[in-house]
Image 1 (cartoon, rainbow, N blue to C red):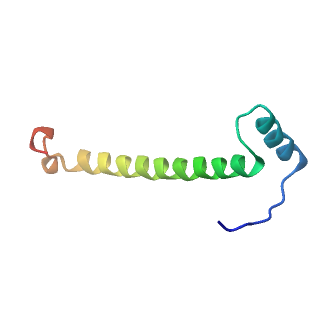
Image 2: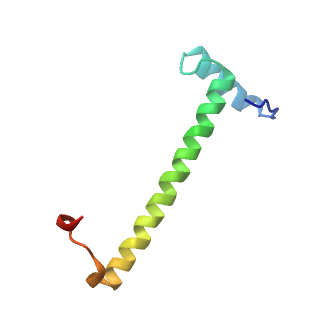
Image 3: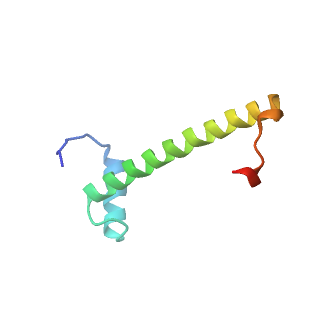
Length: 72
């Protein structure tokens, strides 16, 4: 792993420290890694949702292109 330095507001750091004290995370680093992983998963979900919306629009415009689930 690569080490990075970042600046956080006192309020944010206090909140992360509280989560660590409550046992939600093992350390500050663990909390920050988890938050970043959560954000990455959220972005993947958002992209998937956008793809579904686009496909739904295409299906409404061209219902003849739909494949019945029984054929999948």
